[in-house]
Image 1 (cartoon, rainbow, N blue to C red):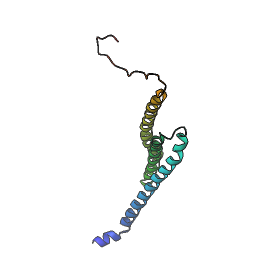
Image 2: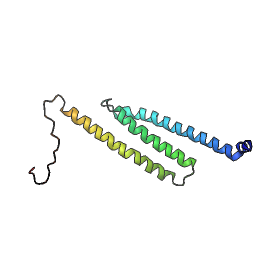
Image 3: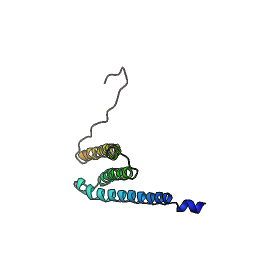
Length: 132
């Protein structure tokens, strides 16, 4: 009985389809890594220190965009473009904000290094009833 199940054409197609899906996703991730590696140096041409942050942003964005499109096409989702856009935006926006915050922190500390100038003090909130 098990042999008959394994020889059934629909079962073979499912296993084959799953193997192809994983291969396509692996290809999407590899393409994302290569693309990020090619794009990140041009973005970080000023200094190579932030290369990792920019690389992570582009790699994640490309991987999600390519992967969601592959899965959408594989599972025949009608709104593949919309799914790809939304999933890519959900990854790209927070990672872009993270990168920008890190750049601002890095540039802020670099701007005052070795100048002899004091850095602006951190904001201190005072409780109610206290004069600022």
